[in-house]
Image (cartoon, rainbow, N blue to C red; front, side, top):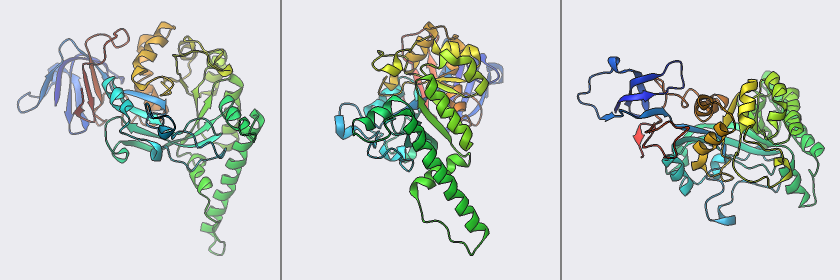
Amino acid sequence: MLIVNADIRTMAQRDYPHGFVEVRGEKIMTVGPMEDCPPLDGQEVLDARGWIAVPGFVDAHSHIGMWEDGLGFEGDDGNEDTDPATPHLRGLDGVNPMDRAFAEARASGVCTVVTGPGSANPIAGQMCALKTLGRRVDDMVVREPLAMKMAMGENPKSSYHEKQQGPATRMAIAAVLREHLAKAQKYQEQLERALEDEDLEEPEYDAKCEALLPLLKGQIQAHIHAHRADDMFTGLRIAREFGFAPVLIHGTEGYLVADLLAKEGVPVVVGPLMGARTKPELAQSDIRAAGILNRAGVPIAICTDHPEVPENYLLLSAQMAVQGGLDQKAALRAITIEPARICGIQDRVGSLEPGKDADLLLFRQEPMETREPPQVVIISGQRVV
């Protein structure tokens, strides 16, 4: 496929106000100005004159496919709230790609989602990055595991207080994290010593410790659910203690400590930006948050936290951030290249560059100003709208 005459916003080093994108198979082959366009003969050509081309949207935090539309408990596979520490759970095993939310996401231009367990447990399990196109989840994987989901504050407190068991305080949540991370560290040391000395036996297999090893080795990040500022800093404190890379998810009160977060250099995935202040941790929520964090120099992405906000409202969420003071270009980056970078999948998605997945949207109007969905949606080289 050859898309020609488009106003191309690459989210990379250079844009092309009158340019082309050449797609072969599932990948982008070339992007450039129309004067460098290859011959049109023998190719499927889409004339996008007057349209704006942007990368497919990326949602850095959701639970799509984990809480299915309209099914109640039968479709609720997001929280295994029977054990405060479940690092061995794989979000991939809980996703139903037939959930209609995937089709709605595609139609709205969301091509890649990070999904996985909810926040009932201090250690909830493994997040994964998926394309929104597919019938079998194995064929949709962009990266798995992508991150270890952890949760601070009100959600695990509430979940286990109702069961009259711990952790019921913030201190206990932090203690659960440290206990299992320290156990995994010791397990890793025993494995390494057994490799070095054939007279030593390996420790007995431990699924929870095994799941935490990629985090301790720096192979994946921790995505830390935290709304309150104190919970964010507790998560960062534990990350420093154990030497893993953190990403703050939600960061509702982050704008109140934006200067401190900027010094930490930690990314914040902001959202959901729509909805009422329905619990104490959301009392300080403000649509100005993304703009304040961005101006302070904090790397940000905008998320839906589907189903808290339906996945198809990711663009609307970014538009709300613009209403709250976020620059339009920064808002578009916050649902394309920035979530891709924050999640470590920028080699595949997030920008229109040669070698990347052919995920591309065409709009008739400025994406941050329109109320229309994209006129064309292409995922992995396949036109789906």
